[in-house]
Image 1 (cartoon, rainbow, N blue to C red):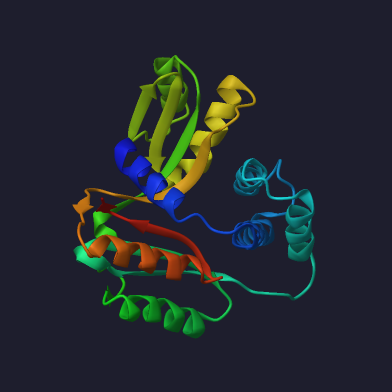
Image 2: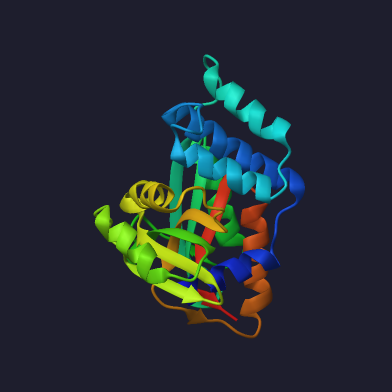
Length: 238
């Protein structure tokens, strides 16, 4: 599972967004999290994790503060999650996670990315059964046994745990994410998480080659240019 996650991280690094896109992405996610769980990071672990990640990605404080303030106001945008799935170049499997205030517009924009790169958008469930919806927590550490004991003592269902080069990475079902994070904070105090996310991890990889590689990169670029797209998950390997 860890290798599949790293493959996805590597692919995203190849098609990293411009700063404005990154700011917009975090602003929207922080807004949704603060509106759903409250504006206080101490009482909203999801918001706390988002703020920490945003700061690591050098998102300015005023962007974060503006998103939280907007969530405390009356009215404003009403974003909801939307997931689209299908097959990309070379037959690889793709899932696109969006936050949208207009699902019809977003679906049309995402579908256009598929059709312009000769790909096929599917219905709900087309490929999602081949991805694990997982929480991932990664931080500096050596004693994975102590980490596992702390999680099991808190009745957390641990899918996998890795200890490589002084880095411990814990994989849990997405439903256990908040419980797992709180258990680690309770057991070890403040932790500087390198990875603190809920992701869709592919269960296997699909090699692509030849003309499919530039077509796939064009496909990713088109998706990442859409404001509503927050993350693209895939199992392509090249």
